[in-house]
Image 1 (cartoon, rainbow, N blue to C red):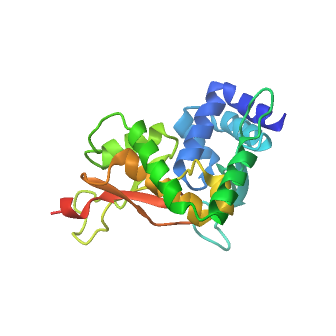
Image 2: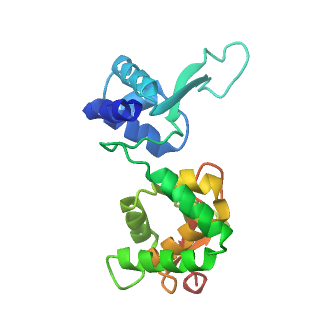
Image 3: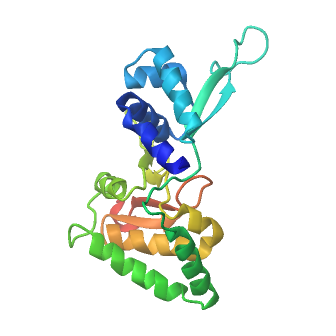
Length: 229
């Protein structure tokens, strides 16, 4: 019933807006910031944020938002981040995660990495809306968002930024295969890379490559080397 309660908590439109804002930031969010983003009073935001925490959708903590410490730094404020736990609902209950883990274990033991990646690449190509690869990072982000990866652009140069600014890449806050990837990282991350190669293309303006970072998807999307000039 816990998963059902968690999903039910998002039926309230204000609560859903608050959750979506916090989840999209990829960092700790204070009550004032969340209230302003959702267009509600701070007290109402605090109530809903705490309800989301009780439902297991958010995690809460406290820190000084001023960035200072010692006398005069102010009291620690309550902050929120998206919970790491996953929630899914099916009635009657079905256990697809166990099936996925058993299949991953069998594939790993049988050395089927290459076959799995080939199948994943074909599936990515089949899921593609167009026969042509993604034309740019913006298009790739739209494709990734539709698949639940929660992409965000990192390193984008702003006006007046020095020329040595890092090349922009698309990183993803969510891995759709996270629970299985934790147990079988080489197998599942390789599968994920192959799937995304099929989805966005391997011979177009953008490419996928492995670049693991804690708490995010193991793959990033960037401009192809032959397209940077």
